[in-house]
Amino acid sequence: MSQIFPSEVFAQTADFDSGIRQLLPRYDEMLEVITRCLPSTTGRILDLGCGTGELSLKLLNRYPQAQVIALDYSPRMLEFAQAKITNAGYEQRWRGIEADFGEWANYPEKFDFGREFDAAVSSLAIHHLEDEMKFKLFQQIADSLTHNGCFWNADPILPELPVLAEVYKTAREEWIDQQGIELAAVRAKVGTSDTQGYSSQDQLATLDTQVQMLAIAGFETVAVPWKYYGFAVFGGWV
Image (cartoon, helix red, strand yellow):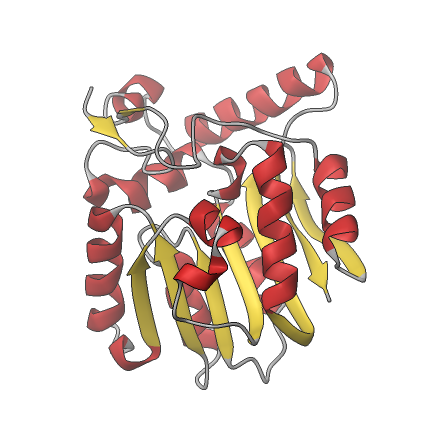
């Protein structure tokens, strides 16, 4: 298998968009929920761990006045996202930055994109951080939002009990079966990852743990607008 960064998942970047939809139940629905939870007046958006730019693209489609600052530590993911955004005609409203959001959480003064974001978003990325770093990131996000600004995260979550782990696993396997593909064929495209910066292999936390982290980090209202077995969209407002 090819060596990749955590969160890249697939050895070839071009396989990500189709492959993730085959492996994860209701991927598009999950991202769509995030786009619906932002205010209609949203201007500046911070996309943390933007990957191939799917969430950025959905946001730019939905909010014609929005400007997106997108961070990712993978240069090839950023390059892929940039091409996608450019092809959609949104290149003037999107800025990709090669950076580790864990580094931003610890040393925000190193970055030149400022604060005062109306919204921050992330998808399938923050679960690669240790819990201590998740909390630091949530704090930094809260500090970087405008009054009434919001943050939404779409991520896999740690099952609360072994019996739920089996339930979640079965749901994913049934989803893959419904796609009419062989799991082995998709897994053959997956790369192997090691630690990169502040991120490592999956370091899942329960939904309850992360909701509590958000409240302590400074979010006045916390919500879970969507959950499907082992995946959730959660966040809140400052």
